[in-house]
Image (tube, rainbow, N blue to C red; front, side, top):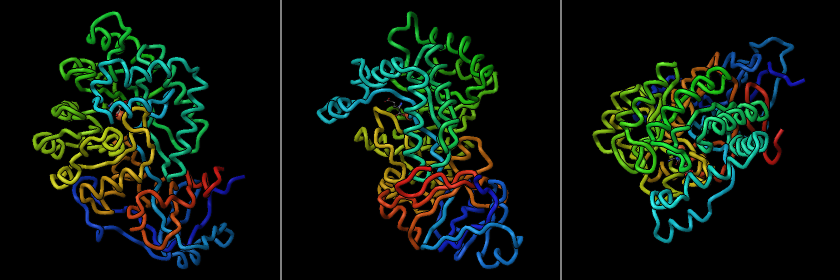
Length: 419
Ligand code: NIG
Ligand code: FE
């Protein structure tokens, strides 16, 4: 049986992420770093954090002690709040086409892009798709990710979107990370739909939304507002219907064209994601809202496009999260820390800002208040890097990977071995 109650340590450095605000710029001096630290875990939840020796004296004499006998930096498990990892096929030719002059929007207009992944994903059974999703999720677990948002959006019919969301639910039961599903039926108007984009969205709202609730598949609705997808005017009634049914909203906003993050804020969305094209107006609007701004640097890298203005967002007072956006088109790398560290170098982000953007800030974007910090009462989701200096994590730009990963107090990964 797995032990879920124990004292674990000592850790050379424990970064609790405690007491840091959800919004605005952060300095590294604000990080709480506990040296020679330990964690008392009880039934998969953090009971106490502090000096290892003092904890060892305080805990019950029969409590299991898990000794860490190497230099280790402990952090909360990362939360990847924007992925599309439930997909079929791959699109290396899109990358080649873009690098020889075509744009993402050109490829989308020529029936490549999202639409080609829709065909590959429709061809899979629910079980096949669940297996792919598990495989992708485990690659993220090895990077220290313990909570993963996963979008549908490659089905684009009621039945196919249901299939993807059921596959995500199945994958959640078969992987060590928590998968948080989001319905992205509004990814684009399917090319085989016999009607207008408005009619497609009305059909989805009428026929799919009630099923999502009935089958308990997701409480989150996403929409892509962009030239190749939907206009703000088309999306507003769709979001109103979603909100009336109690769904949380998140938006693919300002990727190539500015403006749609303002729609996200109007709907009090949990997050507005992408934001590469955001101008001062959108930045100001996000900073004055509770909507989390999500940067997706792997998409900037995959597309060879500009980066989200993360520095300006933070300085204006916004909450910034960073996610992998892992998908077969714009962001195929699936390497969260590599992309985050590159964004940090480009945008001049402090370590505190990067680590906040991967822990308690994305927890907010997902509406989760039980994870993202190493404090009493939170889930015992954490990872250990084999180093004595937390600065190595961003400095090595993803080359330093966690030595071990723990989820709900259980070890789910040690290097070179998935448990
Ligand atoms: O977040 N921008 C829209 N959606 C995805 C890309 C999906 C795809 O190209 O397959 C994104 O980058
Ligand atoms: Fe995306």
